[in-house]
Amino acid sequence: MHIKPLIIIIVTLLLSACMHPISSETRKQVSPDTTFAMVSENPSAFLDQHILLGGVVISINNAEEGAVLEVMEWSLNRWGEPLSLQEAGRRFLVKTPDPLDPEIYAPGRLVTLAGKVLGKEPRLLGEQEYNYPVFNLTEIYLWDSPFRYGLSPHYDPSYPRYVGPEDHGRSHPYDPGYYSYPYTPFWYR
Image 1 (cartoon, helix red, strand yellow):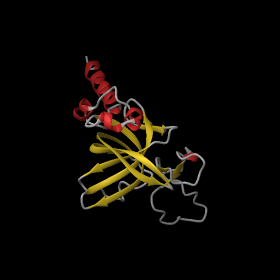
Image 2 (cartoon, one colour; image 1 turned 180 degrees about the horizontal axis):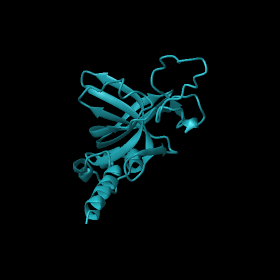
Image 3 (cartoon, rainbow, N blue to C red; image 1 turned 45 degrees about the horizontal axis):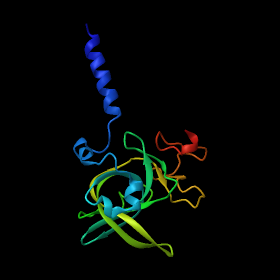
Image 4 (tube, rainbow, N blue to C red; image 1 turned 90 degrees about the vertical axis):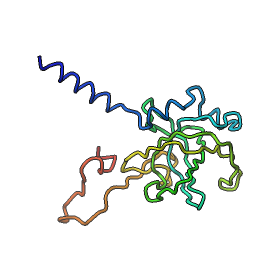
């Protein structure tokens, strides 16, 4: 009867492969009926509520009082992974009292986070004033991917740009330069 331990191991592996990147304690604080679209319309109506968000980092600003991330909203799947850019193209600010490394939280990186609604903050976006919903960071997960999004001058802002490992030269002139997964350009997968 060695089948029972094997089934337990397989079920454990399958369940761990589908785990949410945000801890269950933090997700218990999240208001399930509150969406980012609702908060974006009227942030003052949702003050101090926790919400689950995701998107691509647009910019990071470290100051003495902490760090501020500017993020463009992406839709999340049920496991919290950012899937695609929301058509509305909404942006939000995430504040934390701790400094964040700009090399790690570089523009183009995908994040999933939980935050508490603080209100709104008007800032210039291009030449127009934009009311950013502002969140206090509770927990953040940075997705590991060799692609960066929203950086290429492309009509689709979710178009990926490949950022692989440093190129240390080729062993010979006919070396195609392929790296092992996931560091191969997306069109070769």
